[in-house]
Image (cartoon, rainbow, N blue to C red; front, side, top):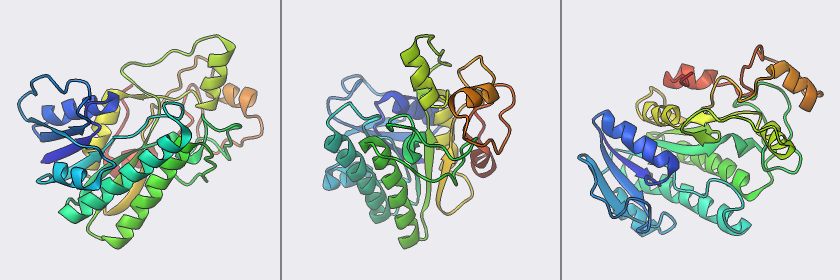
Length: 276
């Protein structure tokens, strides 16, 4: 396939590009002219195109001739810019990616969403109704980043209704890292880890999920959690729940150090499992 990757020079994008090239695909990396590696010679199979994803005509030109699209270009968290900038860029970028794909006849799309699409780490008080969290969990987002990711999923629902030939996956990633992170003992890090439910996603595992989503046998729009199966903590998960979320019921298996996000749908639908 000829796969377009917006934000291809970014942290997650580089892993997706490398994985796609290793599988023998041609990759069109779409990023800003000032993006990292923009001045280096691309390897075989990689085409670099500059585009502002919020400029629809620019993005349309950059996507021309592609068979599939992985959309990663976005602010990855609040605080990188002012609230309205984070929200508006992310929401405009996801809409443009979906609309351009539909216009160009690109039927396979995969969007980078976030576990924060339902609220969580960036909320004033994270709200979880049950553990482990799955795709049916209600959304309680309030910050500009989390709202933008939730809206991106709603946009994908709308495009799947309007264009019934589209297959769109929104992957809810979490704290993507090259290696398993370690929770620091300081109180402020412990609080952040609790808000994030001690989760993470390895970059290589995320990249594999994106590629699987482009060939999986489904139509319409599907949301999947793509998170490591174990927490970053050495404390048993049930104990973590009692300490930090005593009023949240446990409806699934949190034995040992099992993660607080249920990724069974990604395994069932995409054939994906996180690297241990």
